[in-house]
Image 1 (cartoon, rainbow over the protein chains, first blue to last red):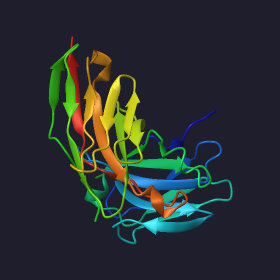
Image 2: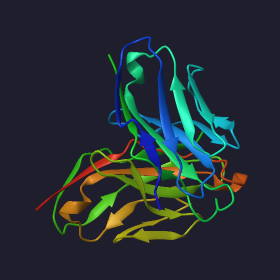
Image 3: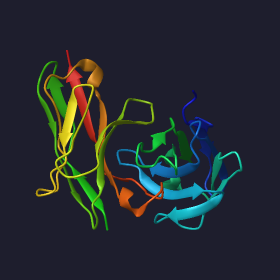
Image 4: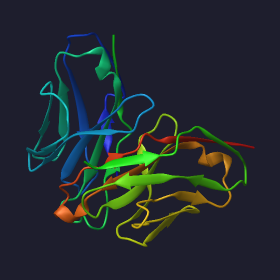
Length: 115
Length: 116
């Protein structure tokens, strides 16, 4: 049973560019959450997708947007990249039905460097 | 808003030493509490969790007890190994809102290094 997978593993962009990160949830999971982890910090919640809609959002600007597909996979898009967007981006999946039995499972992350 | 405060690291111990990593929280509701571990170059793995007051979560020799009166969830292990070297994150989530519509709020993490 594959866990949460993310691609790419590493990415280098320049300021002002746009980036798309991808996530496939664990089998049986229908909810995807995205987190940003700056170096030396704990992960910060960006947003969560369920039934192809953004269900809740953290304190991140509109430059951060996402999408969820019918197969529950998800994309995180960041426009007009800033140096401060350099971080590890983590995807986590969970089940809306079995939420009380389990918690969020995390992928290995995508490390984004903005130059 | 919700917040989590962890003891500042890094923590360096010798193998077989006793480990305590302190964690306190602030929350408006009745959160569930978690410890996640991040090994070098990897994502987060759930280590243990507790969903109500006085619950004890345990896994791989690690334990933490949900103390509502002191709003704490300290992580302990009686005898650490070199393989326990990692970053440990305390986190909370309000699961009582129903469904999986919850977010995790993390502390800043504590780097643990265990020397042979």
